[in-house]
Length: 162
Image 1 (cartoon, helix red, strand yellow):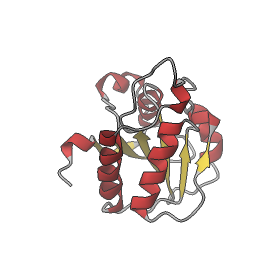
Image 2 (tube, rainbow, N blue to C red):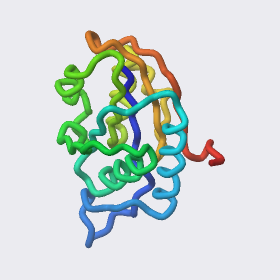
Image 3 (tube, helix red, strand yellow):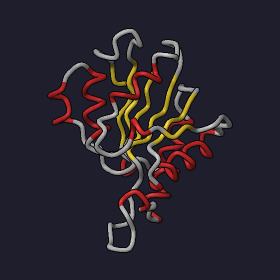
Image 4 (tube, rainbow, N blue to C red):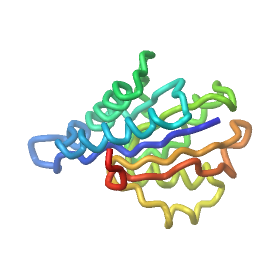
């Protein structure tokens, strides 16, 4: 199966008046996610399901991606993608898809980085994966193992001139 991991776009700074879970995207974050959405849309991958962490910034990221992808199905919030959860519990949802399906997950760092390394079957790969806000990686991995996957792409919005 193809798993597209996206770190939420650049978010507002934390403050005493806004909880971490309520921080929204900055204007740059919104612009960057539109770029990433266009990039994914122009790829050969057709997203079957979108899951996102129920934080404001990840939900907003998923909404922008869905708009760019013309994704019309329901996006699903998942507590498995909350900051600090590590993302691996989402596998219990992913086993219901086929190896030809593509699923998009919107989450937080460093969880997205560690999950990507797990899917690649190499925990030390996390040291070489840089997930700036809005970055994405697509991994082709067998749903029977969820390990030893191959990178399809890895890109930051700063590298896109779209």
